[in-house]
Image (cartoon, rainbow, N blue to C red):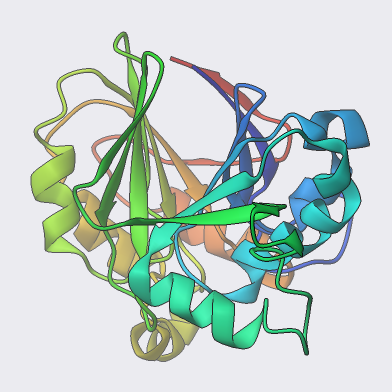
Length: 255
């Protein structure tokens, strides 16, 4: 499997600051933040599957634009995988006819541009030899992370999460883990904001990584553009067993 980072910032502003979206091979999106907008129409038209971690706008806004741009160019609907709670939020607050058209019934209910596929923590979706599994996440809205397994190697994306013991019980059992992408949304001076918004800051990240007993390259995502340097400096000062690195746009992982 090949994962390309389209966006990995906590907000927008500047060339590198696109919100969360990863392109897996050429047909799968892991979240659909503003980074999707850097794809060409031809690249967008190839996307058959979108796996959503949760309903927050920085992770889903480009579903709307992608469908509007290439829905009519495709022979079949895009499948959007999400929990029942997330699907309900998307139906009510985004694809509701007021904020954006409901592409699950447009152009016709029998041949829409999008269809929903409900998943839950532990659900495994097989796409050929590729397996994508929903992992537990702890956030202010219902949320999941994802495990991507090619059979030869695996990558874990935490999604947006606060402290999350359940995640580590799964991650520590993966015997072919190559890469771990985990969020850190705030610097330590804003630990209170991290706690109430169920995100991580560097000191909380250290507590979480202390629970990780495996071996993998660790990358940090979801930093706020205005505090990226400060937050990464604080992370670099951690006495971590495996020093985390900054995730960057257009970075590619093969596993």
